[in-house]
Every structure is written in C-alpha cells, then in structure tokens.
Image (cartoon, rainbow, N blue to C red; front, side):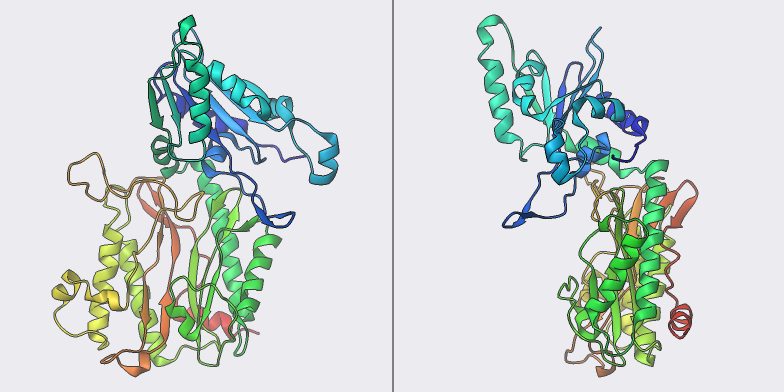
Length: 443
C-alpha cells in the first residue's frame, strides 16, 4: 500500500490555482511518462513536478483536470489514473485505481486514464478557456479534443476560444514554499549534509571519485531519500575546474582538493550542496587562500538575502569580493571597478551565484520582475529558497601564478528567505577550514 498523504495540502493548492482561472475555464496537466532505459528495463520513475505539486499522486499514466466554478456550478478537481489490475500489481506493485485515489487524495471525481479523450470533449464543451502546458506533450492531444468539440457546433456547442499557458501561474505558486515544503527541504538538506560529512570522512589519498560518490548515495538512501536530486559531481584535483564534471572515475592524489556537488531528493524536493576539501585532510597555503576567498564571497552574498532585497544582489556582492581577491592574489591586474564592469573576473568565476531551489534543482520562477518595463531583478520574498554558490576555478594561463593552477573551489548552500532575513538550511555541512580539517583528522 502507498503511504498516506495530507490531501488537504494539495487540495488547497488546486483551489488557489482555480481561483486564478476565469469562470468555467478548464486546466489540464499530465504526469511524466515512464522512460525505457534499454530493452525492457525502465529508468526509475519520477513524476512530473507540476502534476505532483497539485496532486501528491506519484503513479505514472495520470492526468489532472480542473474546472473552475461558474455561477452555481462548483469547481471540480478530476483525476484520471490507471485502473486497478491485480495481475499487474503482482508484477509492478500497488496501484490505487480511480476510486481509492479519489478518496485518498481528495478529488471530486476520478476516472480511468483510458477515458480521458472521451471525457475531455465533454468537459471542454462551452468552456471559455483551456489552460495547459503550451508547446508540451499535450499539444497534439489538445488538437484532437478541440476537433471533437467543434464537431458538435451544429448543436450549439462551442469550443474554448482561448488557449493559455498554465505553467506561469504554477511557477509563481511554486516559487513561494509553504511550511510543509520548507520542512521537507530542511530534512533533505540535513540528509545531504550528512552525506557530505560521510564523504569527507571516507576521503584519503588514492580514493577514487566513484568511491566517494558511493558514500553519498548510501547516506541518501539509508535516511529515506528516494534518489539523488541530480547526478553528483565528485571532482578531484584539476577535474574541479570542469563545472559540470560527471565522469567521477579518477583517483585522487595526495594534495588534491575534492569538490563534491551533491544533494538528495526527498518526497519530491531537492537539496543542492557543494563542499570542497583536501583529500589528505589539510589545506595547502595556496588552497587555503583561495578557499577563504570563496567563503568570504559567500558570506557577503548571505548578507544580501532578505525580504525586499533584489535577487541579483547576492551575485553582485559575491562578485565584488571575488574580484577584489583576484586582484589581491595576483590572478588579475587593474582597477576593481574596471574588472567588474568588463567582467574580467569570469576568467576564474564564470557562473551565477545561485538559482531557485525546490521540486526541481533549478526550480521554476522568474528571476526578474517582468511586470515592469525595464524588468529589474525581482525582490526576494519570505518562502523563496535560493542556492548561494560562489566559486573560483584556476586553469593554467600566462600571467596566472602557478601555485594556483588546477585548483577548483565551490561552496554552495541552500538558503530560505524568512520574514526577518534568511536561514541556511544546509548549515550542518562543515565549511570553514578549521571545521573541515578537524572533521577529516578525526579517526
């Protein structure tokens, strides 16, 4: 049997979306398909985030239809899912079936997924508008539904005159995490922090990147996380200068730093943490100088996170600290303001300082206020969750001090915007030089 869910949470979200639709409008979302890996083996199934956000339902082959209230006609939430099939359950496990799903997840109606096309033609008859993910996998199917409605024109039935994208409405909802979501994300961050600690404790000269990755995966699963939130980056030595390094198959050498970017997914929500540490337990002097520069940049970015402050402020604060440090350490020459204006710092720091975090690692939501003509960076609000991940990556180049060559460092934390500032959800993962060295030198 599937675990019980708090149906009221998802019903409340559906009600909020319905309240934004015109009277009588219909919205449709479907979950993700199962994907074949090879032959008759499939990838581990993962539901669609939008669909799950509104339903809490994790089975494949499912769709949600919402019908907005219109006069005396109340709003309706209708689930379409797989029928009960005892024989298939022997092979594949429990499936709710429409009636049990309706009761467990709080829908007004539930029907077999095989009846979706037939029922949509009726649900769209005389509906003023249809909301769905424009340009997605439903486009062809929607065309069939509309054709079926238009075929009834001689009886006076009309098809929706408006087709609109439902995703921007949901993006704005998902951007602000409620208390239920915040609690899950805190737990995901705690599990991920413990995984980073486990990897640090397992590190030693000669250990392979995949061995450290295995420690992460073990800690994720033993604490109840369903999967990694993304493919982990475990990069030793010069590999840390590859931003999206994925091979994870090289041995570490004495004196290497190891950069690990990894987080688990728990109940549909991601953590995203990066730590960089010396595989032998002690930072060299050049490594320590660069590391403390990145840590100072992160602290500056934290100070720019509070309600009402612009999202871009954290990046700007981090860039200023990093650029000054690059000057101080001889990585760059010139004037600070010129370096920032010309973005010369991107030789060593070429990515942004963060992104939204939630059900997706790079979560949904606008980064700019698109309601204003100049589209400024949007203001932070309580309930938003961002990552803060400054870094520095020094590849060999003329004029670059050789002592810094092949050093790649990133420090990333998950940060919840609160009413009076912010909370670092991933604070349990050590990151000062002293704390990392102390941890790694313990038996």
